[in-house]
Length: 73
Image 1 (cartoon, rainbow, N blue to C red):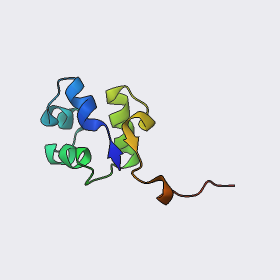
Image 2 (tube, rainbow, N blue to C red):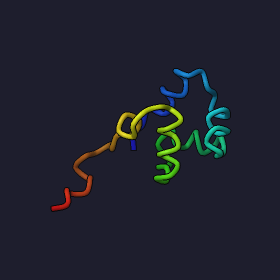
Image 3 (cartoon, one colour):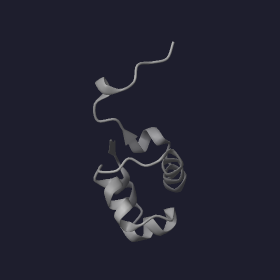
């Protein structure tokens, strides 16, 4: 999933290690999130959104909306 984590992190002057400490995850996890190799759990995504002061939709964007689940009726 595409995301703006790296941009939001660097805008704040934070290193990957600093963000990892704030989220209580490893620096490798932050790197995997930023490069799109790992999609966060919902609790981690919410922690990240609160920490960055952004709604989830401003941080994460599905790469291909055609593969998104259809709306529930």
